Image (cartoon, rainbow over all chains, first blue to last red; front, top):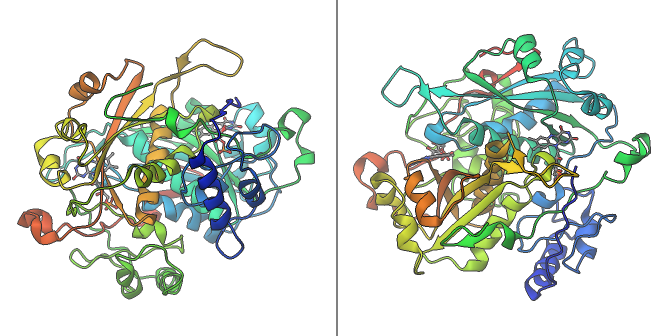
Length: 245
Length: 245
Ligand SMILES: Cc1cc2nc3c(=O)[nH]c(=O)nc-3n(C[C@H](O)[C@H](O)[C@H](O)COP(=O)(O)O)c2cc1C
Ligand SMILES: Cc1cc2nc3c(=O)[nH]c(=O)nc-3n(C[C@H](O)[C@H](O)[C@H](O)COP(=O)(O)O)c2cc1C
């Protein structure tokens, strides 16, 4: 995984935002704890590679900074009820024509389907995701019947809409004390065959859900990456009126 | 917009979930208010077309049910700081290789770029979005340079990843007391030309952000739709081990 250098200049706004974040994150106000101290203490406005470095440029809700994707999972079992609560958040995502193109195939650790879904991942992802509690394949329906019609036509926003559903899933996992880690590294052809996915559904991503484990169990190369990743500065992503890059 | 009939049978689990939601939604626990009463009062587990009908099948955080897409906007101005806070949430979305493919071009009501962005929408969307406070075009970078390389290759998850960023944007808008409404109905060719979007960026969606206005201002046909929409039952979206439709 790349660690972009995102050294945004230390601005008054950044300092302000991190103070606000620190305030928003005082005990009793956050729902997610793992990296609270980082937010409160990283007031330089720069990202430091080794020290869990998330600072908001603007005071968004801290839940968005608290969500992250670990690889050291703790091997727990997850109940069906807990998993469905995580998927429930995805259900309420917005979508074009309210078409709700997202679909989810899951397997929980300790159930007969676990090995099948684990076997879809590439070797690297399998090496850490085998300690997760649930695996989910995210699919999207590429066609839909427009209002007042029964004929299916192409739905151009199926991946975009499934992405927002996955975003809500990941956030709910984090709010529920679990973590979700998206994966593109899996065999899509095998997934289509083994799960029986019809041609008008796209295979979007795999997800490993689990509780955080001891990162000492990871190989050296992954251990140092076991922390929330940085982001490009907001100003690199946003522009007024005209595209700027 | 279609109103799917999603009359899931009234199950013990649904009742349980709606009781939990009602409890989660008592004053002092929610951050989003507009449709609180609906959640608290809709304990039948069915969706009613006319009466703001959201009931969770499982107790996900109520913020996901409180977010919705109005069309009656109140014509307010939004400060750049408020808009950037909404976009900040998008910045922290997960993405494949942390490639962060999302980009946002915005215009605020009362600024020189407003008319240009409004002019990209189709006539229907313009008719209501002209009362919004900000318009945002969501773009995604379709290529990226893999770790250790400087050569750009295709990034298959660009739309999916931009979708999760948009989902966080919409949720932050709702948490901040604003609302965001996604739109596919706009002229993408014109957008590419007028905003100067290069060929390796995809044009994903437009978004209207504003404060809720009086729905009496909407034409009759839209007025009755001015409420949170229903969803398919979770069991129609999720299956264990094998795809089921
Ligand atoms: C669609 C998608 C595919 C991903 N694929 C992989 C993967 O195959 N293996 C992996 O270890 N991480 C994968 N990731 C995790 C990303 O690297 C991670 O989300 C990103 O670095 C941002 O870090 P954060 O989620 O901790 O904020 C993927 C994430 C997404 C959203
Ligand atoms: C990608 C996308 C495109 C959309 N396009 C339009 C549109 O062009 N016009 C419109 O009025 N609503 C549009 N919508 C709004 C959807 O109809 C709405 O999100 C859906 O019915 C779910 O309702 P909710 O967002 O209130 O939960 C769009 C939503 C998304 C996510």
